[in-house]
Image (cartoon, rainbow, N blue to C red):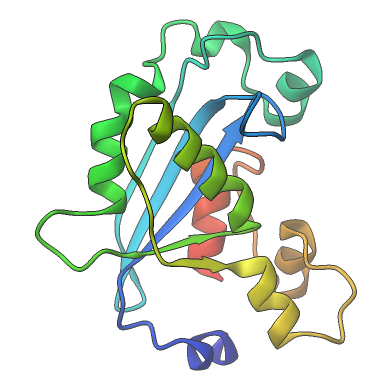
Length: 173
């Protein structure tokens, strides 16, 4: 773990983000769950998550993969209902904006930007992708999926493929 800390000095606040979605393309699919772990000085200062009503059906294979069902999100808030809160967690008004951290950050970042764009809200952040970081720090390993990184660093996750569970693993990392 010391090698991870040496790469970037964890003085900057971090917003570790994980999303679950109805599919893999932000232009066509929607968010079903948001998980955010905020860290400062190498410690967790806040954890937050919410199911999100994607306003469309979740395909059966996604339900099986994440465990998030259409019934679970039916009464959940829509992203538009959560947008102001999510934005505050990603860009707190009174503090330095945290670095947006995600595993395969392009995926999570693109989904959030697309959802905010639908609401005419501009969102941008400094981004740290832990897949790219793992490739840079551990080039001798062929795989850098979250499962591979967890195995390599002996990390566990009580709720794999759920937004907060996966975000917590990245916080541990």
